[in-house]
Length: 97
Image: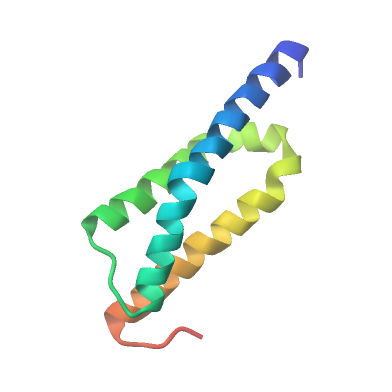
């Protein structure tokens, strides 16, 4: 990786982390609280999760170049999984294990 690529990557990562901190994480935590309280995801919630997941997949080459961010990515994936698993359980009337 060239110095220019590394600098560009860091600029993008800083912007992505800021967006995560100020926009996405608060919304994800709200969704988690919603489903933990027995609520269902509406179409806006599902669209949001789909957008976040699509963006993460598109950025995979960036994350592959910077494994130092794997722990953050792993925690976010776990949060998405918890939200969707609980939402599905709420829809079917089951209790997640």
